[in-house]
Image 1 (tube, rainbow, N blue to C red):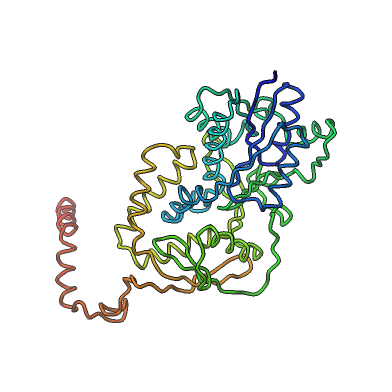
Image 2 (tube, rainbow, N blue to C red; image 1 turned 45 degrees about the vertical axis):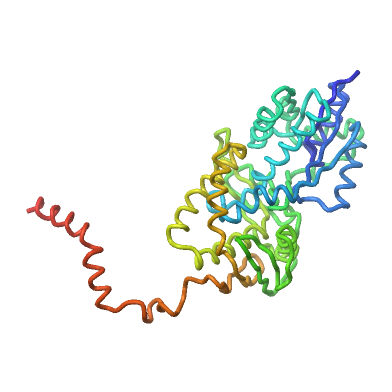
Length: 398
């Protein structure tokens, strides 16, 4: 009887290679699991299921985790305005945690003796999958064929073609990961420090011209409406991507430190995350106090770093989430966003909790809350500590 292995399957080149390799070379019974974090339509899910079976999988299952992924992770990335190195919205970093956790749980419940993933030996994903499996299913063996064989994507294509499967290098030059919180794109130009991704590398092409306005409604810090129509946050994210991505909005290349110590570049396409984070941040700047904003920034950077480095299950993450959520009670209002080819602008906001209240004054114009004499006295007191310090400095010079 063949040993049973659960393969974390995405339908891409790497995990497609793993199916015939494990079944034909290792004589294993492969059961594929696709954990849908929002990157696939129902039609694509059906096609990928059939593809897995055609490649030799004994069975295939798809689990939709969009709701859980949003409620347990994405909303905290919005609350914290999390952008790794002020650039990357942690598209893949965040979804890998939920994919790995679901694979570990499924493997335990199905009685598998091993879990396989298609990560290479030179990136972050191998650490993420290994980490969650070690934590959640320590008794189950780990198999990582691409890492173990140390083969290139070209060699994977050659193997699949030799096994009778229709794969072409030109269609496999880029490694693309699509999810609810954005799409990552790696390959060719991102393998060195110079170069930008061509239009052909992006799954959604830049086809829109002119401009249009989206008005995003927030309540409790979460996106709850679009252009006046109420909808659940997941639908808001999907709808913004549908409208804004064809403008070429949210495209960039992130450069960062990997978990394994290397510097790396990865391209991404994240129209909805970039628009939502910037709109949410604008609203926050008008409804939260100075120190709330300051400490949110510190903890959000920490949260993003921990998530990026596979530490989602560390208990401190739950502590940070409690803080972030507690800051969102007054983050309510609407932000109009004007879309342009390649960029977007925020056209202000409305909120019942706006702290830019003209009843107290207008910056640079005048104030009803205090007088010029009040400011004169305040400044004398405010400057006193440094005035004392500086006087001693002057005495030493003399």
